[in-house]
Length: 130
Ligand code: HEM
Image 1 (cartoon, helix red, strand yellow):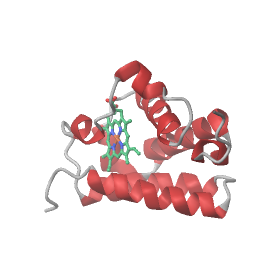
Image 2 (cartoon, protein in one colour; image 1 turned 45 degrees about the horizontal axis):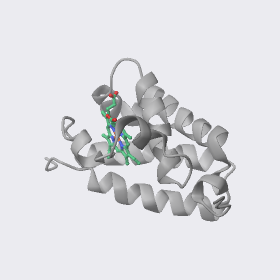
Image 3 (cartoon, rainbow, N blue to C red; image 1 turned 90 degrees about the vertical axis):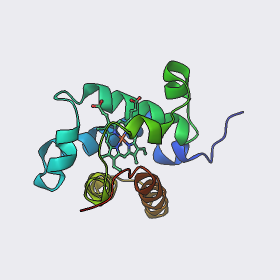
């Protein structure tokens, strides 16, 4: 069934989702505000870009690219090797909120995504903040 009200369609499909993910990682790669977050990642962000795009595609109601290739996302478990506290969560959200603010998504879509991402990012915390 073609669900025209999915978040994926509201975002504008594959091209716009890729643009959002690319902007998110470009910010992470260059902004001093995301320094510690960047240091948790590999030198090349190529794989991170591809994986986040694939995950968000299915998560937003588009093609389930991540699950088809890697199986169940088990996101919290996959983040366990990386120490994530409030600082890392806030840096991740800083990059994403900035990328969303720069996008041409409808204001309601932006707000919805910000709220949902804030919930997931908070759930990813696995260390107590000093
Ligand atoms: C809360 C702060 C977060 C931190 C510090 C963080 C950090 C990381 C790191 C270091 C990786 C490994 C990347 C690499 O191999 O270079 C990763 C992978 C990933 N992250 Fe996050 N992340 C956060 C939040 C999120 C959120 C909110 C989402 C989803 C909306 C997400 C989705 C993913 C996905 C799909 C992967 C790939 C998993 C895999 O297949 O290995 N992350 N993250």
